[in-house]
Amino acid sequence: MQITDSFIITSDHCHLFYRRYEPRPSAFHFIKPTVRGTVILGHGFLRDQLNLSGLANYLARANIRVITVNDCISLFDRNAATKRAVQWQQLATALQLTPVIYMGFSSGGLTALLAAQLDSNSIGAITLDLVNKNSASDYLNTTTFSKPIIGLQGAATNCNANGNGMAILMNASQAWVRTFADAGHCAFESPTDWLCELICQRPANASNDDQQDRARAQIMVATRSAVIALLNRQPQHWITSIKTNQSTAAINLHLPASPPGTTPTLQ
Image (tube, rainbow, N blue to C red):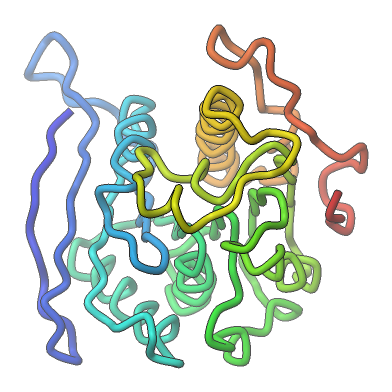
């Protein structure tokens, strides 16, 4: 794939640095790959775009363009999510991205929801272990949210505020949510690092490295399926589109029994 770094200057004078993962051309270099769409992918609190580079590479190999963002708004700012959302939308406009899916990890999930609501070219949002931080949800009314939302949630631990993002998803009129009960907060990053592992607790029943690596693999597969479901305008088919492969064949996905489109529940 082709990976390039650049930045834009936003309306609030932020130098918003981003990395673009462009799907690889075919063996015949004059044939460009068919890009299915674009994902703008944002990090969480005290993280940066490098912690999502593995997921970005994985999606790009599926012919999905990915733009990761290094945010320049202090995440201690109570209004950080709303300010970041405006910047992400300005980035999508500057790069002429359509259709676009907004995706965010942890507190970045709130930004993804807000940006998808702002951007008329957005076809939905995906949240990765969503955390409701700094009351940003005060500005987000998911009951009237016009775009589909797919949420992937981990076990309730200290770093996802004991699963408090689930309440936002449960209020949404169009949400498809699944819980990965073996996944700690750091399992949603690829790669994660020592800082996340130092601060964030793991689920008591899945505390070793192998279990978290397996959870990370299943989350990446499910995330790719979520992106494709939104691009196909069929989010209701997301769960049935999750398929096992060699890396996840032995993994129990811990999916609730309720059918897609029903009220999401935390298990």
